Image 1: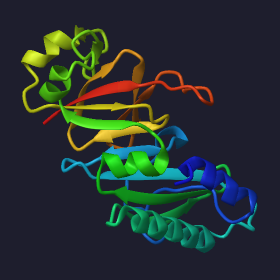
Image 2: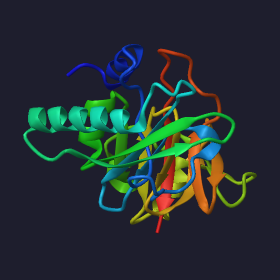
Image 3: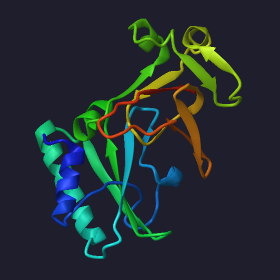
Image 4: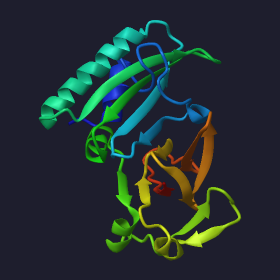
Length: 218
């Protein structure tokens, strides 16, 4: 399937499309967007809500047309997958300092998110991730409660039974169904309303991949 972001850009160039993100048929159903970043929220059962926004100062871009294109894209993707891998949740338009439209997609799992968007995403029990030798033990993590407290991944494993680890190169903001306890040193925390997200300290340049790790605890 054509790369998700390339497809979006192409549709926008044709004055038809160019985004994806949050709400519920005009009523916002999700948290606010941290500093305008796109976001993903991983639910406790592994489902993923993907909020993607686009700036549309040009009124020729009609929200209902963008929604129709989103639904068509989802239908095509589900047909290719042979299952309901993703569903459309809703749309919202913001006009704070310029018109910005958001759409919200909900993916059944990380696999379907990766296939459609091209971003890498792992949501795994920390013991499983560490045992598979992905370098967690050698990483350094910052406490979400005290930024002066830094622990090695090896130190965290013993006290992290039941915890989950998010590893992703998604360039926006990330959170999970449980609270962020620690995050890798190349990440930082952002707050939107009552929600705390993690994101890369430095947003990657085009074509660059920056992976962050986020430890979640119940």
